[in-house]
Image (cartoon, rainbow, N blue to C red; front, side, top):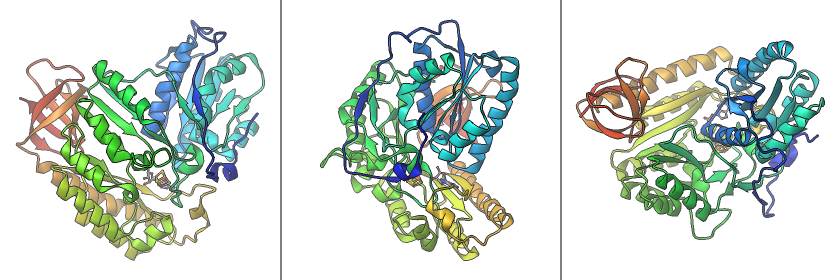
Amino acid sequence: MHLPDYKEARSRSKKKYNRIDFKIDNSIEKKYVGKKYYLKTYGCQMNEHDSENISAMLEAMGFVRADDYNDADLVLLNTCSIRENAHNKAFGMLGRLKHLKGQKKDLIIGLCGCMAQEAKVCEEILNKYKYVNFVFGTHNIYQLPEIVDRAVSSSKQQIEVYSREGDLVEGLPVVRDKNYKAFVNIIYGCDKFCTYCIVPYTRGRERSRKKEDIIEEVKSLVSDGYKEVTLLGQNVNAYGKDLYDDYDMGDLLEDIAKLNIPRIRFMTSHPWDFTDKMIEVIAKYPNIMPSVHLPVQSGSSRILKLMGRRYTRESYLELFHKIKDIIPNVSVSTDIIVGFPGEEEEDFLETLSLVNECKFDNAFTFIFSEREGTPACRLKDNTTLKEKEDRLYRLNDVVNKYFLENNKKLEGKTVKVLVEGVSDKKDMYFGYSDTNKLINFTCEKEVNCGDIVDVQITSAKTWSLDGKCK
Ligand code: 5AD
Ligand code: SF4
C-alpha cells in the first residue's frame, strides 16, 4: 500500500523525471473477456482524456463498456479535486455504489484521479469506504491493469498512490470518445502554485512531452481523418521549458499548424507565459482556432497578488488587448473566482469593471472553495457565504450580458461549424464555430459528424446561436 503525501507532492527538484513506456502484461491481456466496466469521469478535459486511456487499458484486459453501472462488474470513478462540490459528487456516487455492492457481492469498485492524490481521501476510503476495492493516483494510471487484477483476486483494499513529482508515460493505449476530434496532451502538471489551487499537488511538476512524440500523434490523427485536435495541459504555455532551450509553445503551435489538420485548439493558458510569438503564430495560421481561454481569476491586483497569479490587472489587460488587436476575429474566455479570502466589495467591483472592459465571450465563474493543504486556507476570510453568493450572482448577470451582446454581433453572418451531432431540438444539428460557440442549425442536405459546414446565423442567445446551413 502507498498513501499520498502533500509534502512530497509539493517538492520541485532539478532531477530528471523517468520516461516509462507502457506495456500490458501478457498474463492480464484479455483475462477479463465477458466482464463489463462502467467509468464515470468528473472534472476537466485532462481527466476526460485520462479516461480515454483508462478505457483502452480496461478493454485491453478484455472488459467491455457498460452504459449503466447496474450492469457492470467493475465501476471506476475518475475524480476531480478542484472544488468541494466535485468531492461531494464522487462521495455521493460511492454511497450509491455501496447499495449496489450489497446486492452484487462480486462488484469491484475503484477510485482514481485527483481525489486519490489526497491523503485525507485515501484515509477516509480505508476507514469508512471499506467496500472500495482499489485506489490509484494520477501518477500511476499506467499500473491500472496490475492493480485491477490484484483487486479482483484479493480481499484487501489496494491503495497505490504516489506523490512523486511525476514520470512521463508514453505508449498508453487510447479509445477516443469521438472519431473527428481528439485531445492530445502536450504537458502534464503545474508549477504555478496559485495559492487557492490543488492541481500542483495532485498532478505534479510540469513535464513536457517530447515534440517528436506530439507531432507523431497529431500526424496519425490526421491520417485517421480527424478534423480537430485540442492540445492539453494545465498550463500549455509552459510547454518545452523543462526540455528545450529554444523551443516553446509558439514553435509547437507552428509545427502542428503545418501538419494541415483543419482545426487546432489549446487549453489552458496562464497569462504569465503567453508570448508574442504565440500571438503571432495564432494570427498567422487559419487552422489555429481564434479562441483563447485566458483565466483572469480576479480584476483586483491586490487579490491577484494574494492568489499568487504573477500578473496585475494592468498587465492582464495589456495582454488581453494585444491578443484582441493582433488575432483577427478572436474570442476570449476566462475563469473568475469570487470570495477569495480577503476580497472586499471594492476588489469585487474591480473584477466587474475588468469584465466590463473585456466583454468576455465566455466565462466560468466560481465561489472560492477552500482546498486543504493550499496556502489560501491560512488566509483570513471575513466574507460570509451569503455575500459570496451575492457576488457570484451579480458577476453572472454581467458576464451573461456580454455573452449575448457578442453573440448578437454574429446575426446574419456566416460561420464555419464542425458538426458534432443532432441537437436536443428535433431536426437540428449542433456543433462549434471556430470561435468555440455552440451553434444549433437546420440543414436541408444531409450532414455527418465531423463535417465542417457554413452556417448562417439567424438568431443569438446567451449560450448558443441558431442558424441554417448554407
Ligand atoms: N476554488 C474555486 N475555484 C477554483 N479554481 C481552481 N481552484 C479553485 C478553488 N479552490 C478555478 C479557477 C481555475 C478553474 C479551473 O477552477 O478559476 O481556473
Ligand atoms: Fe492551478 Fe494556477 Fe496551475 Fe492553473 S496555473 S492549474 S490555477 S496552480
